[in-house]
Amino acid sequence: MPRSLRFLLHAGATAVVLGSSLLAQTPVDLRTWTGESYYGAGSSNWTVNTTGDTVTQSTNGSVTFFYAPEQSSSGTFEGELTVTGGTDDDYVGFVIGIRPGATTTPASEYLLIDWKQITQSWNHAGCTPSTSARRGLAVSRVNGLPTDDELWGHLNLDVAPCSTASDSVTELARAATLGDTGWGRRVPYRFRFEFTPTRLRVLVNSVVEFDLNVRVPAGHFGFYNFSQAGVNYRAFTSSCTASASSYGAGHAGTLGIPSLTTSAAPLLGSTIDLLVGNALGSATAGALLFGPEAVSIPSGLGGDLLVLPAISISLAIPSAGASVPLAVPNDPFFCGGLLYLQAVHLDGGASQGIAFTPGLELVGGI
Ligand SMILES: [Ca+2]
Ligand SMILES: [Ca+2]
Image (cartoon, rainbow, N blue to C red; front, side, top):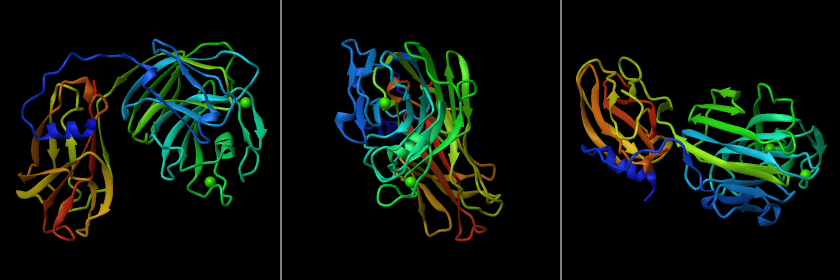
């Protein structure tokens, strides 16, 4: 059963599930990870050692990923990256928020943290022209199915038939100290990634290289190589961080847009209160919607439906707002588990008689 759905089924429950004790920083078993490449298996060779703590990518090929089996919307990953040999000077790095099938899915989106050893212009296969890859470490947002030239140059080229405006790479930031510095051969670098749905911090050898307020797509953490062989990743660990964040716009009632917040972040093993605001100014009736997925669908009632609802509960909302307890299971399985919520209530001051809160994304964590 998907983790989000199991989280969801606990949403209405009163009992807290007493699970196993929590682990802070858990070793990653790379034997459970998956390789994926834009141009098929021949463009990469990810080899995991027998104990699952080291993977080496040995092909000087096209863009390739190696990602975790679980979705991580919030948390940390930490471990060591070393380019072990050869004379090549191309891209190594990481991805956050990638989803399986990203190399064939037109609507895909992920963050790319890539590091080039030297600045170099090149024209890769495909219909887009030559671009220049800049030396240094950067964070970019990747949308759609960009060409190698777009990934190489961190830009958007619109050349039919191989790339449209929605197939693009947008560089968001360059690293604080390594933004114009290439990686060194046979030098181990300790990377640490800390992220929530709205923030990304990246440390290299304990130096903060990025601290960005950016939207981090819900997806998987992974490794990235582009035209670089002999890349070694070892001793990675991970943990999850609880977070609660709003998304979407809501729809105003008499006193404005009603709020939907929590008393605290959804820590595993805790009970938090879901706090439903009242935009009417006097007692009214409403509903709280729970679902495993965020959406944005016009409801025909003024506001957008921001949750694909799997469960809804009806709610009396006093003028000061309602408080609904939510027991978060004390189970590491829910590390990174997602739950989406939205509330609506009757309000004669709303354009169609119903006020909508913004959406609320909960990520279970520690
Ligand atoms: Ca494009
Ligand atoms: Ca190369």
